[in-house]
Amino acid sequence: MEIIKTNPVCWFEIYVQDMSRAQKFYEEILQKKMMQMTDPTDESMNMVGFPMEGDNDELLPGCSGALVQMQGVPSGGNSTIVYFTC
Image (tube, rainbow, N blue to C red):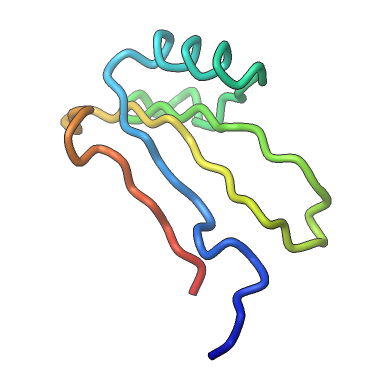
């Protein structure tokens, strides 16, 4: 069996209804500033990314993700998506 040297999770998305409330919550809990990731001209989706530290040339043991607010996609229940490195 091969040992995985990096985290198998490479990205996650947490879908929210109130972006400013969710962003404030996670910034306070993590004591980290999140960053806007969405094209401001696209009003159908809003994404705010969790910070990730490290050099882009190195494989990192962790992963990052984003809060996502999208029209027609409710929060709660099954509103988190986890992406695995393949």
